Length: 117
Image (cartoon, rainbow, N blue to C red; front, top):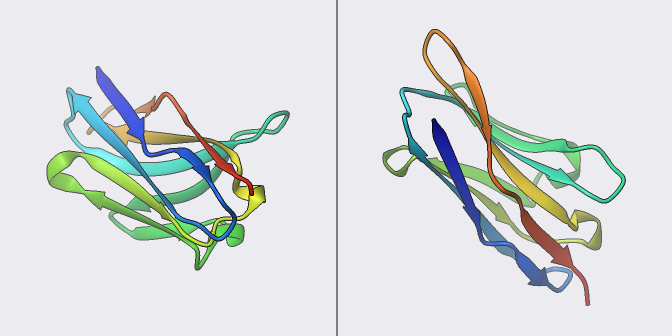
């Protein structure tokens, strides 16, 4: 079993920055995928950024403002969010895909990010 613990959300003014962290613990054989998703009220949960051995990907709306990174030694993924906009307001979730022959998805508990003046 793998547990993910998120931290770093909060209230920030437009144009401000936040850094989210997601740390994994437990039976981790191999991490194939690390991603950040977000969900606003009444909307689906959408992928914002991801990182794999092949590199990073971002949704168009956050390109140039968000940066995803990882610390393999700590089994942790980060999301640096700069130039935040009110439309970035959402609950942010991290997801890891873990395993060698059999892959399983694990989700963090979610952290609220509110961008408002």
